[in-house]
Length: 436
Ligand SMILES: [Zn+2]
Image (cartoon, rainbow, N blue to C red):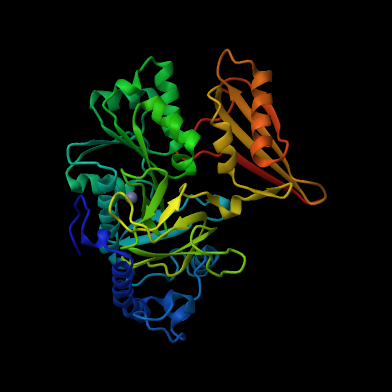
């Protein structure tokens, strides 16, 4: 396997037919190994007559999260999606258990982990990061995979890389400035939190050497109002990144064409389906992203339903030179999080996109009350910046939601500092279902 490098190699620049051929070569190389020694996929796929070099992927069944969770529950603690003997695995990460499910455990061998780090070489290069950059990771690393591979990749690439674990936000800001960090990797929520604390501490972030923020874990990096707020507060460019514990770090934003997230199709096969029928949607239409990773054969995923709602465009050469598919507007939301209010399909991100337009909103929280007998109700709590006329603000936010989404939300003001702040992923969307 190739070394880790700031990457913009031949594979990344292939045109669609070249990419398709590369994907087939990688799938054909992975296929016999996985079928021979991975119990999970052997029992799922062995009876299917499939030629990995030529047949349509649609001959194969999807892999779902529920299936993986069931496998881990039946074969604790790691399940059977393991291609190599247990002793060969060197890393364990687990999901945050979002959606109320139990955390899912995921093992990687050294080869798999090298693949992760190579992906980050691609992601960083596409964002214009160079060896001279100093990388700051302002959070505590835990069992969640978020940015672990980014950190280790940055070290392997030769960048000075700093972890801000076990520190308060003001201490992290000082640490970042004292060490003249130039790139910050965190969630969009925490980028905003650091900016809020910097303002309170009298720190002029745009005057700092930070020029880029790579954000992940939430859709905020691709929500225009959230992104603009981060970029203004930091005087720096935001790069959205999408990845998952179980599938890998496969989405990145390039320097040349902001507003969309490329999929690293030299390392995966991406499909978009109608989540109800499982049939492919046409390019440019919304649907669920389905991914097959091609370089993580020791804990692979084949046709994995990500639960991510996306709108993918293909077949165009990007200004960055790549032909990789592009998720327009990033990940639009988790399909599980979609609520139907008065006939509208709404994701938390659609509301965030509206609420973040108001500079006077310091923080917000949305509660969705679903009731079997009546209509879904939505309540928005907004925390206003000091000195704001809260009556006017709540009226303006309610009107903006009505204009964009055609329903009336109950918007109310709450006291400054009363809503929770987050270091990692935020919980701003609370759903209660009452069945009476
Ligand atoms: Zn591009």
